[in-house]
Structure formats: structure tokens, C-alpha cells
Image (cartoon, rainbow, N blue to C red; front, top):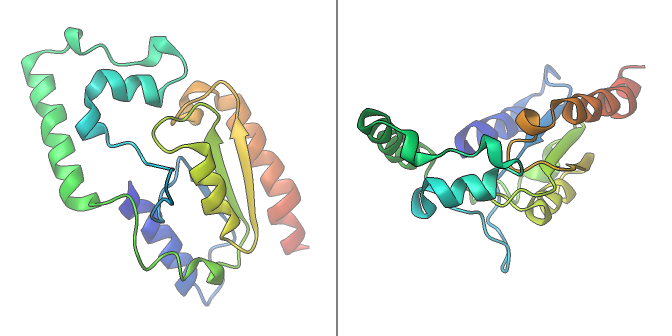
Length: 168
């Protein structure tokens, strides 16, 4: 996931033709967390603890006892590959470059996100010149799954109040 976020941010930094008009980041990482903040490592935590930290709603949490051996093997392989491609949860060069992202940025965080804490995401948002930080109540790391109406509402508000004024 870091690679996806870093790629969007770096693209926004290089966008001298103004093709990118805004960015929305959900459960985003990108900068090294300042202690005491930490980004949870699902590979180290295992599926039960990861589910507890990722989802506010218990019914959405994975029950590993229901998985077949093939599914468990696929999950382990996915985590191995993600570790290769994503590496750490931050890019050391990003901290010094974020001030060059001039488009409006919305950082959305689930209030109960135990994977990437809202305090971390608030700090990430504060580093962009034109960022808006919002939390989604009763949601963990995947607010778009747990509270889609609230996420769509936040997106609508962002577009109407932060993106469209630039286009007027």
C-alpha cells in the first residue's frame, strides 16, 4: 500500500501540467512515524490481532479457523510479496517533499483505526499545505467498507468546499 500512496504523491509532485486536481488518502502512510506513534505490522500481529485493530465492527473481522489450508497459504504468500514490494510503511524522501503538493488533499481516517492511528494520519495531513483531515466515526482502517455513507459524505464535502473553489 505504501508504494501506491508514494506513487500518487510523487506523481502529484511532478504534475506540472495540472492533471491532478486533488488527492484523497484513506488509512495512508508515507512518513516515518514519530514516537510514540507506530504503524501496526499485520505480518507480525497475525490475522486475529490484525482484524481487531483493522475493523471496528467485529463481524467484518477474519476468523482464521474458517480458512482452508490453501487460503492460509495464499494469505502467507500475499504478506511475503507485500513485504518485498511495499517494504517499510514510509518513504524517507517524502517528508521533505510534501510541501510541494499544492493540490487540495483529504486525509480520511477511521476513528478506531488501530493499524495506522488517526494521530499519525493527522500529522500526515498537517504536512501538506492544503490538507483537510477528517475522521470517520465507528470505523477502523477501512472506513470505506465499514461506513461508506460517511466516506461518500466526506468526499462530497471535500469536493464542494475544497476542490471546486479552485476551479471557479
